[in-house]
Image (cartoon, rainbow, N blue to C red; front, side):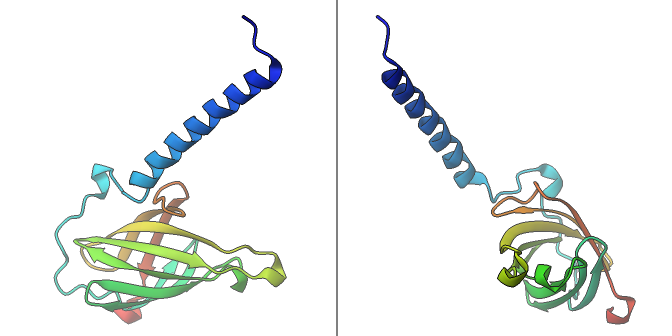
Length: 153
């Protein structure tokens, strides 16, 4: 039996929707997790002080404020003020897990974007070595590294 073109198209569309739904449900269940063993938290760093100015070659100057295990701040992106953003997150052992937000600027045609990042804090508390991604993903964006200003030790 030969199916008509509209029936074949309807079956194809149903199959595509089913595949899309299953793929998005898998992402929704674990997209925000950093499951890689390389990102398992190590021991907390005694006396860690994240407060102060940090510099990232790719993301510019950052100002971080630590309150217990919570960390928040802002960064001045080297691409200009319409790309500046804020960060907020938490220390988990020797990891800093954050959400970053760039609100954008409609007058400059820069859309708002957000994402997540995870950093391993150096044992001396003077550098961050991490990865970032868009939305709920931690890794699809690339590497994010930063060094603390020596004046803010």
